[in-house]
Picture 1 (cartoon, one colour):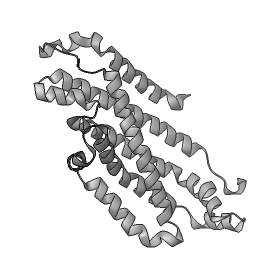
Picture 2 (picture 1 turned 135 degrees about the vertical axis):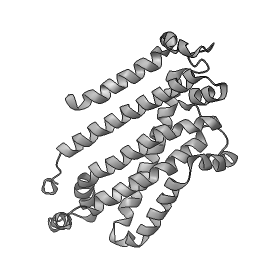
Picture 3 (picture 1 turned 120 degrees about the vertical axis):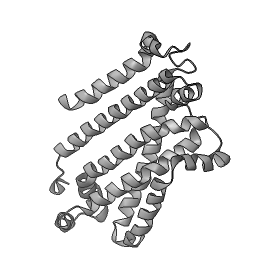
Picture 4 (picture 1 turned 180 degrees about the vertical axis):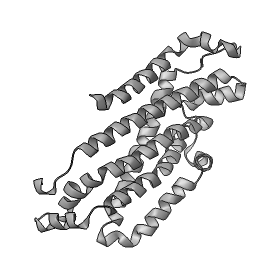
Length: 245
């Protein structure tokens, strides 16, 4: 129970502030603006859309990166390891703003270009950790599993992935946490995210809007970070046993 208490508390704080901001208008009165709480869209809806973009892009990036990591750590795929690492590095180093600018003419405005940018940005951390997790396994363990009669597929699913899952999960955690902040940029091309009040505040010179968006993005990042930390601790407590398979 103690393991899941921090993410529960962060989630409670996030939802309470998101739904309770209209009641906090006096807090923002110091800025002296006529509209102190972002009025154009429900902050709860923006939070939901923001989280949906991050989770969907994270799932796609995880599926592609983990699959690529598994493939290039097999004997038949070792020759493609440099290529996979190079492609993922390009996705990480290419600025998200540039990805948005290039994707808009092809996909249009809205969530699509933002999803592409977040997907590309999430590839490298997950792939790098997948490679580290799988390559870091003691070969004597996999050899023992093979000697017990396991097929290569069984060794991967029952031995290698369980042993590497904490390292892989740390890569997913890094990618998702970074993309929570990066997703706010999508508001500049029509995506409905928590970047909306930030962009509106910058355009109108309303610091209260900027603060509201930044606080919610920060709380969402802390909530997700705390959840992944709990998942990693849970993963470290369960020790896989090849013999039990």
